[in-house]
Length: 138
Image 1 (tube, helix red, strand yellow):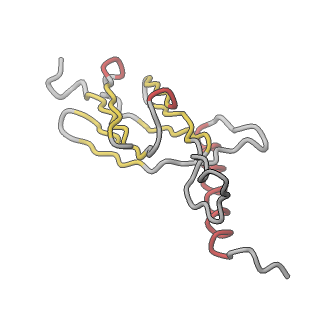
Image 2 (image 1 turned 180 degrees about the vertical axis):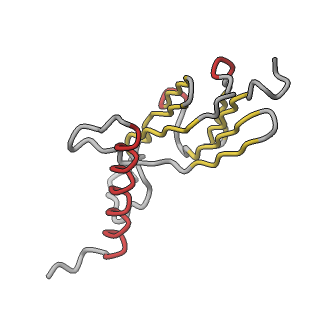
């Protein structure tokens, strides 16, 4: 019996893979076999009277690592988070961060003004503001 496996980590990995499979199925764009996303950045979505704000945690990412596309009904965020190298001459003995490519899709309300989306990246948090057309923005 192997003793180097952590049952809780195994359960978390199964949960992550199930979530990826469900998201892939619901999006209608299944990912090729063996190329599942290995990282799902956490996000908060806030709706105000005049805009939808999406905050995504992307520590260590820069603008060149991120792609953002807004179209009727959906906002798609794609990119990657690279693993930093270990200390010179050393190797990781524990690696708890999540790394790899990611793809997130957020449903947008019907009144979202996809032509005027703004985004900023500061302190590892991407903030995306989607104006709502019916809120006096016209």
